[in-house]
Length: 308
Image 1 (cartoon, rainbow, N blue to C red):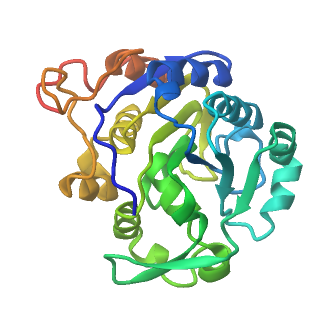
Image 2: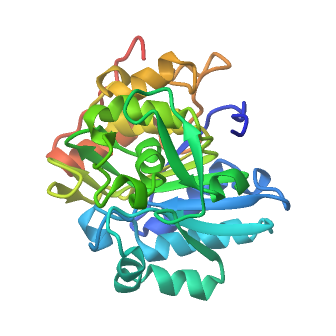
């Protein structure tokens, strides 16, 4: 397992009607170009849960994926791999239908279907399952980017960068299609926290353009706030995503477990070394933008906060 980076947590909140432009600006604000080295094996894991339009809020968009790939390519890493394990067995068919495969081929980067091997086996601090198999790319990658939409989720409460990796990497060949045969969903929050212990997410890109409110991950309502979160710490990024949806970290069981284990930052206090830095839109302004889009009301949970 790679050692977690100890850099200052930065969450850049940007807004643009073009999601790709918001991502581009956010990656500038977190200084992506200084993070990726020439000997890195960069893995990008996008959220492709099912065959759906990016406008539905269920999956990320091909154009935005292209922007991320091009930004990574500009850093000249050793390898760039797009890797995920859809809940559908034939992920390549899904990629062709939505347009992802065209992007991968045109940008000349690798694709790895994480549903298939060769596999390695890892132990988890969890009862069911207590071990899991992952594609051997897990041992080869040196830099991991999680790219997903922000959603309210009927089981996980919210879905953002951490859940995208926790549920995107386990193999469907082992766990079933969908991934429920061996008990992942029996205690989903503990499972997400346990598998997060095994991963280092270096950059989190969480789009709220669109985000899904209501009953996610499939049956909710997509709202287009034009906001995107780009973060250097997945816990900090997901904490901000949770705030946009109206939740404190304590309301998201897996997120709270991870924070209690000291695996990420959750404080907004910028006067301490542990505080999250916001080089883009402030969290208060972002909450007002999101709430107006979602509920036609301007309110910010954090406008009068005393303790985060």
